Every structure is written in structure tokens, then in C-alpha cells.
Amino acid sequence: MFIGYLPVAPGTFSCAVSIILWYFILPFRIVYIAIAALLFMLGISVSDSLAREWGKDPRRIVVDEYASMLLPLYFTPRAILPLAVVFLLFRFFDIVKPPPIRMLERLKGGWGIMLDDLLAAVYTTAIVLLLRSIGLIFI
Image (cartoon, one colour):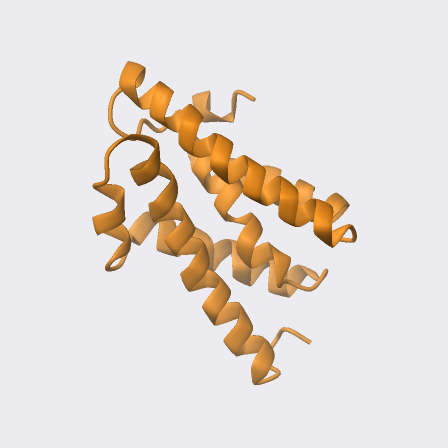
């Protein structure tokens, strides 16, 4: 994948990879969970290696976005509005990095690259589950 080499918004475009995986693999929930976990673990290792070569959290590394976005997508119904809400929320938290997301980004190597996005995904998931529990949007 060469999404990280896009001149504009590679992290945003990499979320499309998550959406494609979600669309085709979510019906096979165990496989989905296994792929998400595997991508995340491989992401730590690959990001760690690449960060040593390219520097701290280079924008060319996008495995953090597409691996982490799989978490909130797991709880997202197959409909455009919920998908758009999840996409926008995840990108918001990933870009703005409210506390303590920014602190995780400071961790060295692959852990810092991956964990800040995972926490952005956790924030997004919490909102998704809240919206589902009150019956708003997520039916």
C-alpha cells in the first residue's frame, strides 16, 4: 500500500482501507476481530522499524489509522449516516488529539505511533456506543 505517499491527507485516505475491510469482513465477526488485532500488532512492529529509518511518526505510516479505525467500525451499523459520523469523529480525535491522546503520541517508536490512534478509536467507540444506547442515529 502506498497511501502514505499521497501528498494530501494520507491518514484520511487510509481510513478508506478500514471501511473496505469493515464492509466485506464484518459479517465474519471472529475473522474481523482477528484481522484487527493482527493489523494492530503488526502495526506496532512495522511502525517501529520505519520510524527508526524515517523519523518520529512520519506521515507515510498509515497503518495506525486503518488498524485503529476498525474498532469503532465494529460497532457501526451498515448505513451511510453512522459511517460518516464514525469517520468524522475518528479523524477529529486523531487530528486534534485531546488529552491524553497527545501524551501517548510521545511514546517511542511503534507504540507511540499506534497507541495514540487506538485511543482516538476508543473515544470514537465510546461516542458510538453512547449514541446507540440512546437510540440516536445508530439504530
